[in-house]
Length: 150
Ligand code: DHK
Image 1: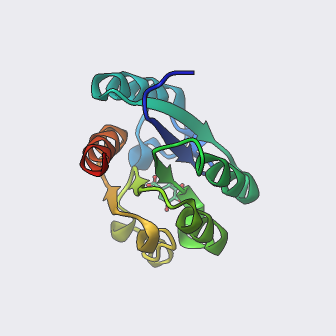
Image 2 (image 1 turned 90 degrees about the vertical axis):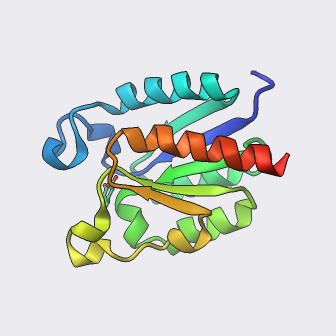
């Protein structure tokens, strides 16, 4: 356990398949590569990271609920659940934590079913279209938000 403010970085379904999943859209890096990038950036920013992935909506909801008392903020790539999940929207809202929505691709340049997000309304802001670098941008933005709030 560290005393540094903790950021929960939550990854939704199919993101465990990064590296082999449609690399032209999602890039060649694996989720483990991204996790290691996040730990490095968090260390620069004086933050700690709890990096998680699940393919199950209810598990993601439970992880968000558990973050309420522990984390300083949440960065979430809800993946396919972005476009469907009222339950994740509700959990993020009740967490009372600053939330940053993150996507590797830019969903607005893709199929119309990806143009709707149930998360945007409960997020401070959204980052999309920058590939894995979006996670670094997300941590930078979270660092700023937490500094401002402290
Ligand atoms: C990831 C997914 O798995 C898709 O379902 C979303 C998002 C986009 C991303 O770009 O990271 O539509």
